[in-house]
Image 1 (cartoon, rainbow, N blue to C red):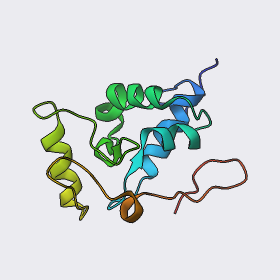
Image 2 (image 1 turned 90 degrees about the vertical axis):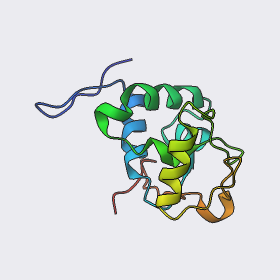
Image 3 (image 1 turned 180 degrees about the vertical axis):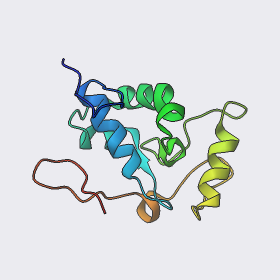
Image 4 (image 1 turned 45 degrees about the vertical axis):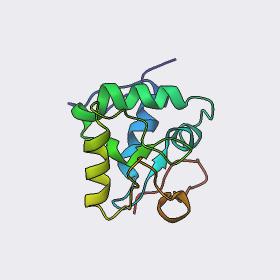
Length: 124
């Protein structure tokens, strides 16, 4: 696996990681995506855990909207006291209704990215 070359002064990542970062950045305010959905759009449908790793290691450095990524069941995956409350508050601040137990209505809030012929999200 070769690293994707980045423009001068930017970091380079493995291809999947670079795609995942770009896709996570594209999630609009007021919408959520699932780990599995992002893995599929990034080209590796079985790599949901890899998306978790990307979010865990790069959210702060890359300023990713980590709070917009939830589990496939529509639930916040973080535990109470370990980020659950922060993620819930950030989602609610963007107008996303979140139940007390951390569930989001995916029919209403799931992001549906537009794809081009190369299967990468198109920029707005």
